[in-house]
Length: 280
Image 1 (tube, rainbow, N blue to C red):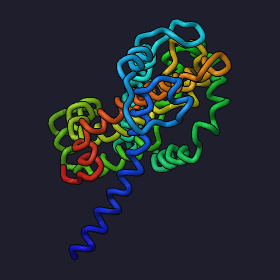
Image 2: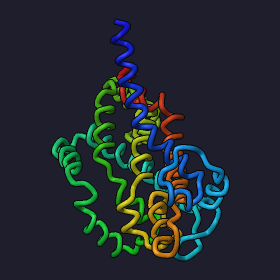
Image 3: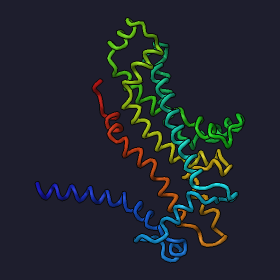
């Protein structure tokens, strides 16, 4: 039994090593100057350029226009992440509420049609989505970044399953008290769904934060670039001019990791509770 426990821990530690090692190496490399990285590759020990590199990527204007910095890209990523997550939660809750509590014909068919859209990733529908956004004049806008992405079959599925587990007695009690559909949704279902909302929020925030293809397609204005896109932009600016700024790209990569990690760590208990809780 003791040997079995040791082997289990070794397997877990091995998994942790493979997950954490790239992040540690990225951080170590981000504390060196570009010349050291260019000559020696990935660095295994910390350097002496930590403050300088992170101050540069956060506050020094750069890019092709020399008008954008890491702080602006961080703000854009925050807007995209929060707008993406909140929009998906609102749309998903309303869709699931209509499917579960409004007895209209073909409700189940409508749900499975929504669910079938999971088979159509963004890459499949990206050209028609872009045409629609462009025709509406939403290119290079925050609404163009967020609105086309907020429909969520995944969120609708989770909230539908959650609403179906809510006892019918609550609906009957609300009707007896004279609560209409909106009041029942706002005063009863939303408070009951707090843990589920937290779980979906974390998933959608991380997914929205890491979006690369859609922001690359829909934004050509550097003032709307996100952190994830900015990492590539730093290297594009420098290649062909002088030594690539790998140190700044690595520093920006670390900054891009921090908000999703903090969100998951802070709301970890809510996340787990929202996915596994069944008692109401």
